[in-house]
Length: 247
Image (cartoon, rainbow, N blue to C red; front, side):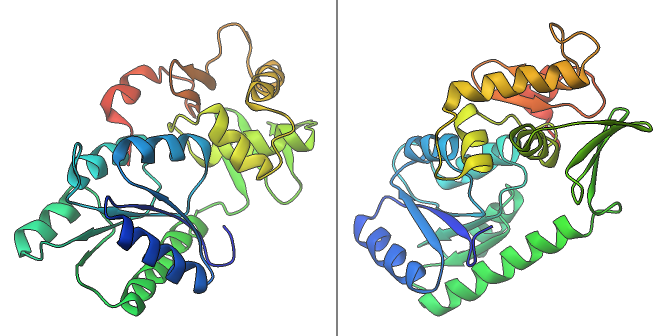
């Protein structure tokens, strides 16, 4: 996460987008903007974000629908919903579909910043409360974050920096398909030297290290049209991908 956090703002009002982007950047956040759910999807394919600011009333797919599907596609992404409708029923609906917080327009920018920071703190606290900090486990494997090493039982498996970074990204988001572009952004930031297709090479290398049969992978699976997903129990990712991904 960047010092303030990397935020994606989704709102169809261009004046509000411009105002919020400038204000939040002045508060130390990195902010990108999208005018619709379609633009948002493109951004999420290319970039990793720490938090989503999501307007409710938009043409096409509304914020409630977007939030509901993101809870399947991006279960770990914190979401704050923004709306001109302040009715209790709307706030309840927003929280019911998976929003982490809900703020009614008009609002004071300072309050928005306070809520963003509170949600980011809660998200960080959840990640840091893992019962085995510093170790990610899948199947018979343990990925040790401090030594940047992979273990199968008592056998150490050597990883290059890129292999470790990609496996770390996948293991940190189990059951969550990650596109080539997203993996590239998460592991190489602004350096796009490996290229999105270069991710395929690293995935092939990792499969040779962790799969009994790399041609029929159980742990690092492909979800066609979505990307790669780590399946901790080596089962079938398809049923979860079709709507039962844990949130």
